[in-house]
Image (cartoon, rainbow, N blue to C red):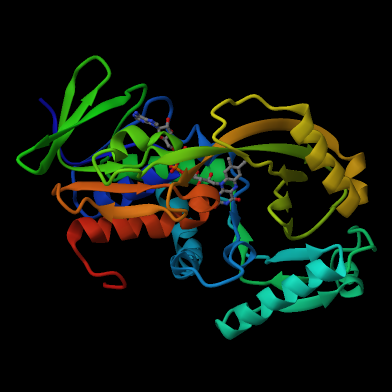
Length: 360
Ligand SMILES: Cc1cc2nc3c(=O)[nH]c(=O)nc-3n(C[C@H](O)[C@H](O)[C@H](O)COP(=O)(O)OP(=O)(O)OC[C@H]3O[C@@H](n4cnc5c(N)ncnc54)[C@H](O)[C@@H]3O)c2cc1C
């Protein structure tokens, strides 16, 4: 029977980041992945590292998000060195835009809070925005520029963490669904997988994204994750349309390499289907064309959907079970799992090693 120091359920960006970190620290680690690693939410993401674009007021997760954003340059270099994969890390800032004076007022409040929190935030008039990004509509009321935010290529990041985990010794079992957690004398003992096989492990980490609920039942009642489906479109343009991501109320246009622009994303709670509705695509295209009229000339490339893992408490579960030794949850990163992945890996490895938060 195979036995591991740690076994992780789910081979998304969160599970693979944790595995890469645990293997680096010498833990014999395995990942159980129901399908193919990195093929669910982590592959669908726009890759925004939108700490300031996403948080308009204080939340404890804001600090972890800032720490994770700070980790990206080093993580990008390390992953490239170890795996040869370029995760497309770019720190060119994010523009958050307002189409009305009311929206601009809200951005001013957010920018004032960011500045007070010590993070740079540059308010811009519509004219100043046009000088920086000339193809944006001239009808914008203004915006705010967050220079420290950035983005990565999400599928590349997921692949890089998977490859780094493998290179450091993690074993990844694909097409292997975890079915039941095994607990013995108040301690994690292993996982029963499809086919009835048992994987023994002293530590079990639940990172099954939107599908974590059956395993979270061992924690307190009502602890669950659920899907928030998002649809996205990619288009190609030979003409440079924008230089940095443009963001408005969860809608964004993200410039990637080779003339690719991602337009996202719709928000549909508790929808497990992967179906891409024309309704969602039309809404995204209409908003994109209103904000950036030249995008109408771009060529359609692809459309896809993914399931963001939302947690019942709003913020992710990143904790050890209070009563079952060696049982951990790290799931429910909702719309920021790409951003939070480096910090989540370190946080969970520290928790396993019982290093206090902020230690090292
Ligand atoms: C359209 C869209 C846009 C997004 N944009 C961004 C963005 O710009 N920035 C950002 O930071 N985040 C973004 N996100 C969110 C981000 O993608 C997620 O937060 C992140 O990918 C979650 O990673 P995960 O590993 O928890 O989940 P997943 O990637 O979903 O991985 C979970 C894995 O668990 C596996 N699994 C499930 N059940 C079992 C089982 N029983 N046994 C074994 N394996 C199992 C699944 O097959 C899956 O591979 C976006 C998401 C979507 C959908």
